[in-house]
Image (cartoon, rainbow, N blue to C red; front, top):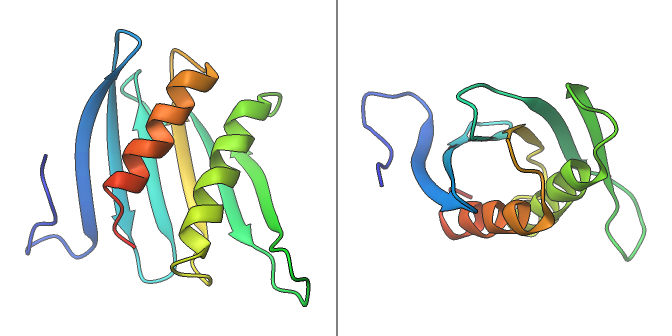
Length: 124
C-alpha cells in the first residue's frame, strides 16, 4: 500500500485488492473541497458519480447522488455512492464525493468489498 507523498499536493492513497478474480485498483484523494475515489478493474475511469449530503433541518440525513458520466441505469452504482457519502458525511459533513467506478463486475458482493476497502483506507 502506498500512502501520501510529500511532493504530491493532494493527500492520497492507492492500493489494490482482488474481488471475485478481478484485480481492483483504488485511489482515494482528499482535496480541500471534495473526496475523490477511483475504483477500476478496466484501467479507466468508468461511470462517474457525484454524491453530497443535503443541507436541511431533517433529523435523518438526506443525500443527493447523480451520475455525471456513464451508466445511468445501474442502481447498484448509485447505492455504492450513497453508502460512501453516508459514511464520509459523518466525519466531514461538508465534503462531497466524486466516485469513479470502472468495473467489469457490478455485483453487490464486489461493490460491498470496494466500499469496505475504501472505508478501511479512508483519508477523512
